[in-house]
Image 1 (tube, helix red, strand yellow):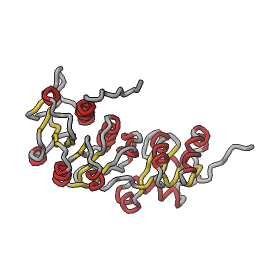
Image 2: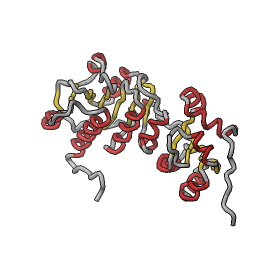
Image 3: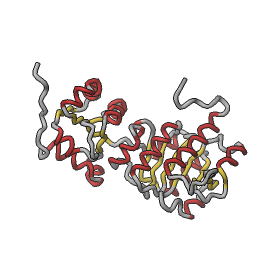
Image 4: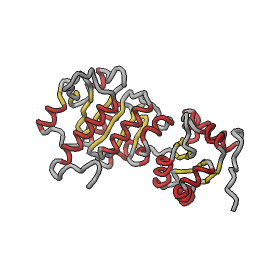
Length: 283
């Protein structure tokens, strides 16, 4: 049997043009569709169900290498298009495309649904503007076992291609609310019985002290601020405590994603203390 031939060979194809436009926020919002690049993200989109994965574009080589993924995509109801490398490069937003790009439906969750589920650990991204950081914090929250992530209306677009890539599929694992004013997010979480901790390098309270006092075992939401200037005073004032990650060495500070990982895992450990802390790698 001769090898399969790509059906899409022109970047000017209407299907290709429609996918390429999703790199722009206004088109994503209008169509409520976004791009997921690479086999890991596409696999998670297919597994998410509910018709999340709408289309799959793949080079012939990638389709052969990830034949199981192509089959999963078809089972999930996605339209599969074989495309030449130039077409994939035209759709992709990366310098070195992996040969496989999915078009997905928006997956964000209404904030009210998150509150109704009585979350115990939440990451709130307030004024976070870098998409790579937003995606990485989402990934950290997923790994730490958080129940939800909330992006305020002052934060980056969840579906920015860099944010989607940085989440490495975690976008499809846990509820994420978007566009929530920070005051509304904090008020709603407090009403749901969640303690609000603002992460700030100049915080009055030390994370180690919080752990030693045993105050972190209950439902907790961490509020993380802008990469350059942290949290504004009015946002800090909304929190029950403003907590700093202690610096025991000579480093000037921690970047946002690293600090978020430390804070989220500290809460996860405190909340699991009565039943033991699950290993990251499993047993």
